[in-house]
Image (tube, rainbow, N blue to C red; front, top):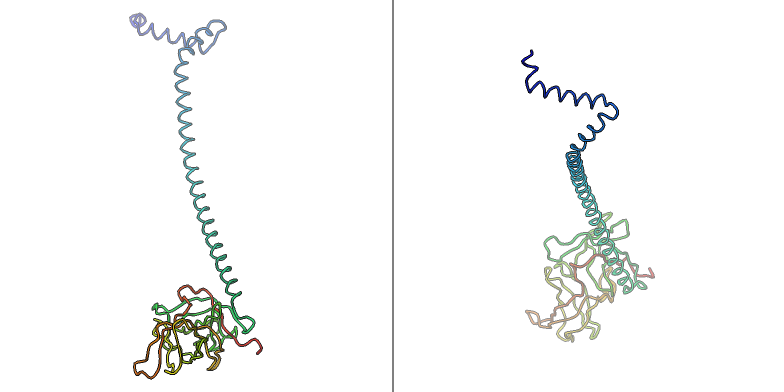
Length: 271
């Protein structure tokens, strides 16, 4: 025991115990200077620890802010896409309304009872033989009624009717045969569809005069087809294969692929 108490380890142990006792008991004017020296020695380490802690906290806040920014950015992108879609819809509606107003201003509303209808489908084969509209029997549509757009341009006539919809045979449909005449010379014939490719002015007598540029309108001959609906302009006059009649190509102003709405002629205004 005496040998242990005389060792350096024991002396160091006593010295450490003494300092700990001073710090623990904190006697006035004795331990304060020691505490001050001790805390001063720890000060650099405290600064490092504080700086490190603040940096770690700053990194955490930065990472958190990145997450928030990503969420806000995603929300802003979604909102921007929604606004762009709404704007595109409003612009499209405005264009449709403007087009509709222009057509209404150029329609023969003083002559005919007209029913506006939206085009909802067309010839799936792309042959331009028919279109379908969203008006049917419950709106007064019946088979044979002519269908027009602005400036009384004839599109075709109703061929099939359901309660809510109707199918329109176009002028280019080979089943479409309409009695027509020219406004300049009074030459008469029929406008016949050519398998979706165009319209032919056919069965014109050789004695009648027809020229390129002449305007072709409906003659009023036939059930439900009024006189004066515009069919198109004559182009390329020639004789038929048997040389008994004259023929010509009729250029229609109607662009089927661009049709959005049409007007069904329900009857004359006075009826």
